[in-house]
Length: 191
Length: 411
Image (cartoon, rainbow over all chains, first blue to last red):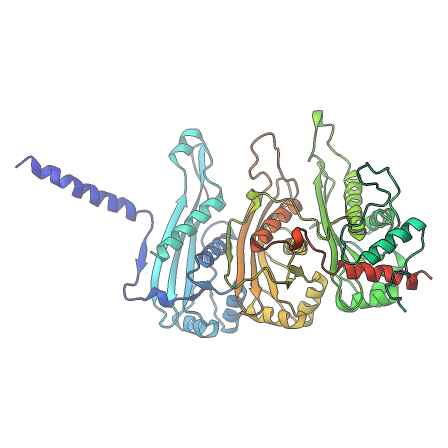
């Protein structure tokens, strides 16, 4: 009897450890009361860029928007239209609109949701002789009717792998890492 | 006064020319004219290319190289290359006076009033627009350019378009004997190739828009095509200059031009002459700060009476060293006012190259052309070419007009 107890504990301990590891890859929040099927048209606002690459926000936004369109689940309003309406509505900072501004955007663009985002990292990491590209992005989806955050997700991909450290490689190309991040975020959005 | 393009009104420069012209005019829809002097089943002896009875104006060369380049000095070689192919070229003082009279400063396209005036005052059948995209002495020297023939008259349309891009070390060969160090040699090669391509088109031996080579590695990374998009229908497309976020000056215009060329090579999508699009953008005071808006698209559609508007943004257009191009293309539909196509493409010159630099693309122009070709291919995927060959919309009419007008121009 006494020997059985620890063996029963092992799967539970493993499960806890695995779930802890899984959550370290990126956070995700879904509003449980939200009907995501009602969001059919969205606007992707310019992303806030905290990286050293001046165009990182545009690069990630382009890839994410095209992936979102290619998913066939939602329609994304062209950037030019978003920029025009934002300017006309007098939105000071289109990257992070206020609740009032968002409701105004929703009415003028006839959209159900607004996606805003932050590019936290977009560049090369170095460690000793090894290097690798890394991209880290956080996004949130806001419902235009209420201005509430209904989904948030973040993803980080790339970096220096064991193989790179061992063989001195430079990791995956930046565009591939960007695609991987956006793919991960789109998957999280529809999960 | 213009003569009607009947079989009896043919040029009479020489019996050979008259015979070919008669054949072309009477052949109607036939695209393949027999090579003059060739005998089926036997290698044709080298014969002088007969004079194509088409009169064209050569506009000053547009400089999209992103730096200073001797564009004035290049007009002479371009004129000579065209004349060598037998074209009747109007250039120099006559064109300069015409441009000054109409206060035309932009020579990278042909708008409607200029096309009308060119037909009436210069008596030309078309205008040759030349755009230099790269012109670097090197080492290695690099030359890239696009040339197109736009019909004059009431409706300026692209009749022919082709491009050429090469670096001196593209084909080094054994012991580097194939390396070209002289920029002028590359320039001559480029102009001879393009003038030859134009002459081939005029003699209905060549294509209207020779397409760029394809390759799986140049396919768009991500693409979306709306279910409502029907590329099988005949549709006109206005390609607006892409928003340029790259460090390269004119990057947006260069990618837009690459798309114009590839769309001209498709069976169903007919690009509007960029000069006419520019005229509409200026006329309607359309400014596209963050890309094309629906309002701008609606205005363009109304003014130009087009079915689709293609816009986009260029994030990288690097042609110093290993070329690198990154762009997004978006197409808006007239009917729904929605995005019917969106794609992201990024490549660099050594993509998919593993052994001895084999397959490396040396100029950004060639890279952008391949990428645009692949985007357009994906756009029209599943659309069969008519009769198994690429048609030449309007070419027959253009050639008939050109042949027919010779009588009026040369009494």
